[in-house]
Length: 209
Ligand SMILES: Cc1cc2nc3c(=O)[nH]c(=O)nc-3n(C[C@H](O)[C@H](O)[C@H](O)COP(=O)(O)O)c2cc1C
Image (cartoon, rainbow, N blue to C red):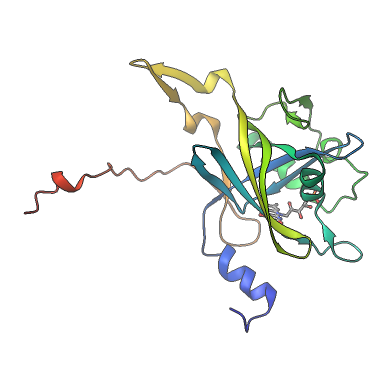
């Protein structure tokens, strides 16, 4: 990998490690201006503590190399939120990924409506099926203006219509959320439409001596 150019290295990873969920990162700057941008180097990292990880590259689009606005905001405020992306909001998510300057709010650009998070200084998105209010747990610098954000989930919001109960246990209707993720190829996304079912196996039930 060390002998390859950065674009080829990147391609080898993003066209093979698929599908990837998308974190729609919601944050605000020191003056309270709201920001929204998608990040698919993203996943949950554990339940105790409830952590998620987001990989943020340097912003190479702008004059000089700089941090992306989401990263700058998260490092300034130490707080942010993440919305998961439904099919209904996919186009707005895509629009929010344009290289808008910091003074242009992606909320306005993509016609998004914001509400306030309950415990952190960040906006939440009206219409998002699932959202997480997060506190920066650790930032791992991986290069100039780039790194991995580890966020601790302080509050989870799930729209009531996706929540239920069966035999006293929490049920989450994931298919109804119609979440989208990133897959191989430029501009290709996937639906959670064709899950492959496999029961979790126990070694002592495999019938081996
Ligand atoms: C679906 C999707 C996934 C993306 N994933 C990432 C990612 O994981 N890391 C990253 O640095 N940029 C990613 N981007 C690009 C950022 O969204 C883009 O650079 C955006 O302008 C950053 O906005 P900000 O400066 O407001 O944070 C992705 C874009 C799209 C459309």
